[in-house]
Structure formats: C-alpha cells, structure tokens
Length: 267
Image (spheres, rainbow, N blue to C red):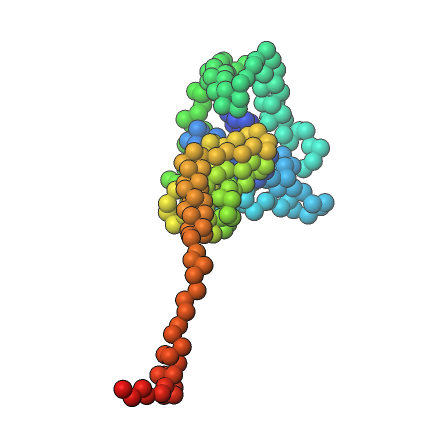
C-alpha cells in the first residue's frame, strides 16, 4: 500500500486487500503523516469502492465508515484511466525499481522495517521537479489537511462479535487463534489490526495474539491450553464419580403402619 502526497512517499505492506486491512493500512499511514488530505484518491479497488457501469462509484461499508469518521471525501478513479492516477503509478514504479531489487526479507515485519528506512532516505532527497526535499513541504501541506480524530475510528480493522465455540478458537482469514476457555459459550468481541488479534469478554481480555500472515495456521496460547486441560480433567472426574450398586430395601412393615393395616400383637 502506497500513499503519495506532494511527492512524499509513504508505504506499508498489508496482509490482504480486504476492506478491513485497507482501512487499517490507511489509518496507519495517516497516523505517520499526522493529518489527512481533504480528499482520498483511490484506484478502482474492490475493498475501497468500485464503479458500476455509468452509475456513481459505491464505497465499501468499511471505507465509507472510515471516510465519515475522518470527515473527508473519497474519489474512486475510473478503470483504464492512467492520466488520473499518474502520481500513484509513478510512486509504485519508483518503489518497484528503487527499493525492491536486491533485497531479502525474513517476514512482513522485516519488509516493513526495511521499507521504513528506505522511505526516510527517499523523502529527504532533492526532488528534481520540486527543487527541494519532499519533507521540506510537509509542514505547509499538513496545515491544509484535516486533523485526525483523537482515537482510532471504529471502522478501522476487523471487528465482529460471536459466540465462542467449545473448541475455544476463533478464525481470521484462514488462521485459528485460541481464546481462554472461560469464555466458551459466551458472547465475545474480536478486534484485529495489522499487528494483533485480540478477543474481549465484557471488558476482560481473553486472547491476545500476534497477527499471522501465513495461511492455515493454528496459534495457541500456552495458558489457554493449560486452562482447557484443567477444565477437561475436572469434567471427567465429576462424570466418573463412583456409583453404588446397592439397592436400599425398605421394611415391609412400614407400609402396614402407614395404611393402618398392621395387626396389633397382644402380649
């Protein structure tokens, strides 16, 4: 994901092109910038919004919520319109030709760390057309932007609620994350961003995992596994309590006394 403004380059690798990750990536870059342009210009990206024939483009619910929280407009470019998105395409091309060649990464965090170091150097170079460094124009540009809200908008990242199943795992993308079994059968709130996956139950944090970008992985917290084992052991012992096979026998004379049919014995 690349954010280009006044020749300033800001970029970050995202785990997917889903709307929730695009909103999280947009917010992360805007936080680095410290403000938001009055209009966000995007390509015809399904996670942001798409043109439907001649009708006006329709934003995805997630990005519409983010734009509303920021108080800015969103412009979706038409397909096959290279002149309208030349700034973004040049930034992408510059990234592909100047940053990526000859580099090796051990994971997404390493990629973003190297990208951040390269970006800082690229933004302090003398730009041929600007005849200055892009960072020298940043303060003037930021003054014309919209201030960011004090807290992260609700539309950023993955958010949903669910009833925790008996296996005490929740799924994001194709990965399963363990949750403390105390919450089994109860309603939990799942919150995930680019770095972490967290689960809450009535204000109590019942799961906190690093976001996994690999596919089909199972991430288990050791404390969750110990708690699940203890609960299973308790349930097994409670269900296996010894049962007595002895059947109580009542004295038949008690029925006679109850119904008044007992014969009086005279000494």
